[in-house]
Amino acid sequence: MSQLVLFGIDICAVVLLVFGLYFPRHRRRDLVVAYLGVNVGVLAVASALSASNVGAGLGLGLALFGVLSIIRLRSTELDQHEVAYYFSALALGILGALSTTSIWLSAGLMALIVVVMFLGDHPRLLRHYRHQIMVLDSAVTDHVALVAQLEQLLGARVHVATVQRLDLVNETTVVDVRYSARPGTARTAGGRPATAGAHR
Image (tube, rainbow, N blue to C red; front, side, top):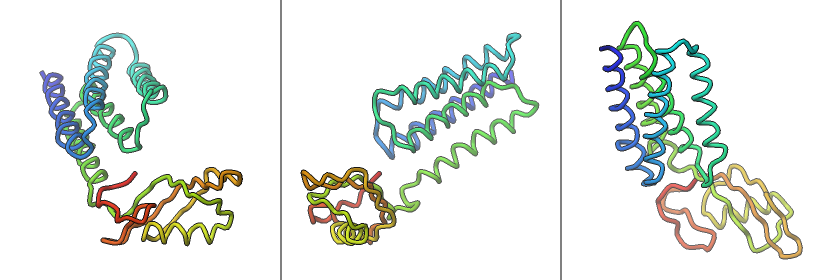
């Protein structure tokens, strides 16, 4: 009976994680079924393994290997926060399948995962900090001049600027920029005011 209660808590937790946090914030429909499938799949496999003679360690190892393979061999790009949701769904499934002496302990750990994701992925957390790849129509070899040019284009304070490709023939510079936007002054590379939406 206690195992069925844990199953129910896991389903409620993953539904809250996916439909209460992830989808309203990021609106990527294809990952909804992925997170639900990972959670329920791990829950089913771990439950079957825990009821058999197979060691729990082997079962958890197989589950982790499977999810890591999915993430490693993915055909579409995933952001870091989407990988975090993958592992959260996985952890919820494992906690729901493992038999513990206290249901409240497992339920509390599941709630902790959901709360951490709610806070860590909150739009207001570090909302002025942005990250994007920029292509400049000039070959800039001086780092100080590069940072100054980026700050002028973005209207922001550049914290890290890493040159990924410097093409002296075609006069282009590809740079990975980490910066903090000033409220109401952030601009795009074209000089137009940037939208208030979050950047990667």
